Length: 427
Ligand code: EPZ
Image 1 (tube, rainbow, N blue to C red):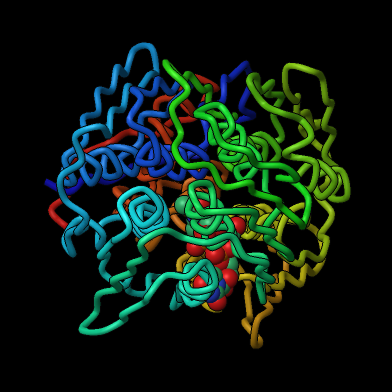
Image 2 (tube, helix red, strand yellow):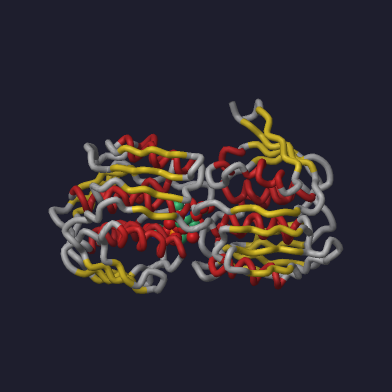
């Protein structure tokens, strides 16, 4: 049965919140477990439907995964993988499933994965992944909606990415870990999740250097056999940023723990620019705002890390919807990531889209109404907007939100929000 959130406006959010492990770090790390026959223990794993989907995919290939939710631990063992074909139905549920291609190809010499379709935010091509595999010597057959890659043994190569794609960097790095010789990956992504994956690969016996810079050097090894590898997933900088904006929007006082302050610097800088106080410490960040403080509109351009993250664009737009002045928000990473605009306008926001920019004229208040979450971050943006809108907001499509946020309703309510989850007749 579909569910929806009923959100009543709340006063200032106050209190302490622990941030969970990063969805966009644990998904590639789970795929990377395919590279080793050793049983891996992953800690600080968030309880998300996307994580569950990745585990189901690994199990469909013959791997074993055990998730212990109370401790946030996953034990994954890919020793008994007996299939190299990822199913269309499972990959359709989770685009990040395409990250199993590199590891399957590297360890078994073959992989067949459905070409991921587009999604709400864009066409999401994988051409850079495939160019990387081909550069490593793989034969690529891309037909009938499936990609098959095969190679007796991958050979190291020098690869320059046309765009610092996060997924392509991850897929190629995993494939190169077992290639013959050295691979140099240039113009690669430098997101913290790349560093976390490289750390995991080195933990299982890989030889990866330079992750976090735009050039990564991978010395291929014949097998990855370090026994009993354990890895703790980095905190989720996007979940942290989302809760930072919740505190700012409600003019609250919220301390977020288990946050790497460096990873949320772009969000911190932008919040300070719009007149919100953010204190950084070695355990996290504290967002405070005088209840009467005036939010000042600021422009925004999303960019690959360390620029402002595209995954925080919709949430920032919700904040600017009731700021004083005009904010021009430009989305440079994905071609269709303004799905929240229509719904925010139904709540009374004044927003005009011109090409890749949204011009947001701040209004004094938004009003609650019925809205639909179309994708993960647009859905989160609607929850944020509803916290301070006048009247009740009903949000359907919350399964999108649950993909990337663990109990967002319960945890915001612990800070003073009023979100009720009810069954919904509307899918
Ligand atoms: C990862 O997606 C994240 N997902 C996304 O988070 C995030 O928005 C994105 O990186 C950018 O930071 C995961 O990590 C699971 P890209 P990914 O490859 O790897 C183009 C969320 O909300 N491109 O860096 O798919 C692509 O079309 C999700 O948590 C190519 O042209 O992102 C896009 O315009 C959404 N060819 C741009 O690069 C390729 O082969 C960035 O994509 C690959 C990408």
